[in-house]
Length: 215
DNA sequence: CGTTTTTGACCCGCGC
DNA sequence: GCGCGGGTCAAAAACG
Ligand SMILES: [Zn+2]
Image (cartoon, rainbow, N blue to C red; front, side):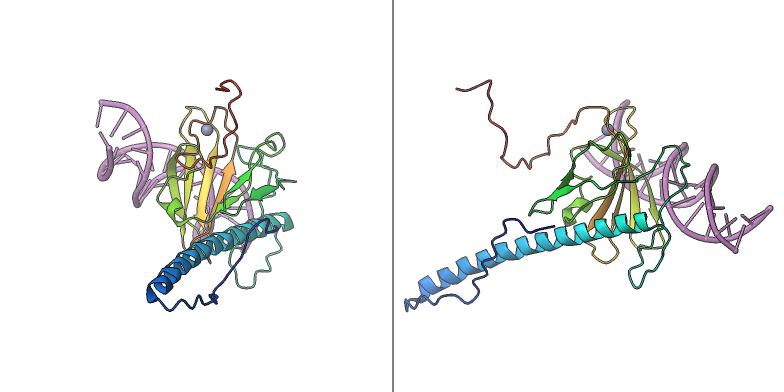
């Protein structure tokens, strides 16, 4: 979890332009304020991403650890599910997929671990707007249940992929108990249909060049 | 009118 | 066997 290329130039102590004119000073102050706001947002996003990664790791660790419930103050004591029962063989032995977390907190994970464990454990986001949207992960979900767990005061939502009539993909979304801004999502299953949505209106602008249409 | 959300009921494994 | 905790169903409502 390294901070790749985040430039933290917090120039709070402005270098004092000393122009005498209050107009330019106010302009500078405004620009400074804008920069600080931007910086603040970036930091918030980064912190959220960090919290997300932390929560993800913690959950995975708890899952791997088994039933060593030595929780001090967190409350996210969720014992693992060793029983190989259930309708789907859930056996996340090495469910350690490396997820690349960009500076925006968008974590995406490769879906090539489907052969071993069909449930891709846990991917988190840190977006308060996620609660309103159905989850902008590029799929259509239909909520089919909601439960409140005793660990977390916030209810947990259960989604199911509604694009294809037969799609075994399910999803659980729950916001962290400590940080309301951290959503913990647990994907389960594998899509057997092409992804209908194209990241919505948030294309990074990093699309590949079209080789078929050079001109 | 079709689809999705809501929400309580139901079910089922598990521990006691 | 029973209670508890969590996952799913399904009827009604809401939304377009
Ligand atoms: Zn699907």
